[in-house]
Length: 316
Ligand code: TXA
Ligand code: MG
Image 1 (cartoon, rainbow, N blue to C red):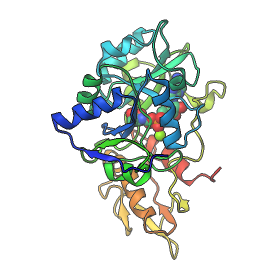
Image 2: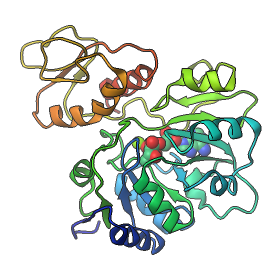
Image 3: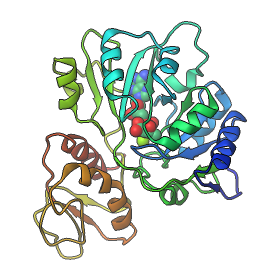
């Protein structure tokens, strides 16, 4: 482990150029996306990708998402199809990841895909991420920039709290707007499948495709690798669907109710998604068990409930 501090860069032209130069030199740089902060490495450099797994303490059987600046750039790495085209045109740049067969002759490190024949790709909408990816001019592998299993980062301060001294730099450009990781859709099988609910509601994707997405749980042979039951976990115990706090507990509310922090007083799911990880970070720092109010399961509520269930799951 590197004992130096992590450099904090801003979002000026000069700083983004410096971040791109570090990535091209095989260093690790965290950067903002509209979903969460990612921990970037040049996806073509095996040693850089290996360093991502090391910095996060992530199991190497859990593959990474390759981030690209445009649809055209993404198409160079995967076998494209009609559904990919439909979803990319509708939702890229944005909080959607597509899993497609790897194309022959690609130069992606096998560590990125954990040796699978498919690649997860995404074109983020955040202007700073887009600027950085344009300057790198190549695929950037980027998991969320948190130690494996912990709460995902939605600010540069969260990144520093988890990874300071383990990565070369973080590009600080404020809080992430969406606040939940991208929705992952698998398009390499006979039918599109929802591999991870996320920042784009499944209903919206289904409306665009004109067909329902297979749900991962109903098809246990088509598992998304590395989707561990305990994940996004605060240090403190988490209790779900609580109507009020028990003595000693902190209350994370939703809608009008007495609580310590509220995901959305108005009961707005997009606001709740944007607040989720930041509020969990804040409550966790207060070192008391956390009770969480029920959150509806439609729209972005599906992904919010997915993250909450993993935060509350027994630790492995
Ligand atoms: O919003 C996001 O997606 C963020 C930002 C930084 O872009 N990234 C992110 O990465 O959430 P990560 O590594 O925390 O989650 C990636 C997920 C993992 O659950 C992994 O198993 C899945 O994507 N994945 C990656 N490649 C895959 C593949 N070829 N097939 C199926 N699942 C894959
Ligand atoms: Mg993650």
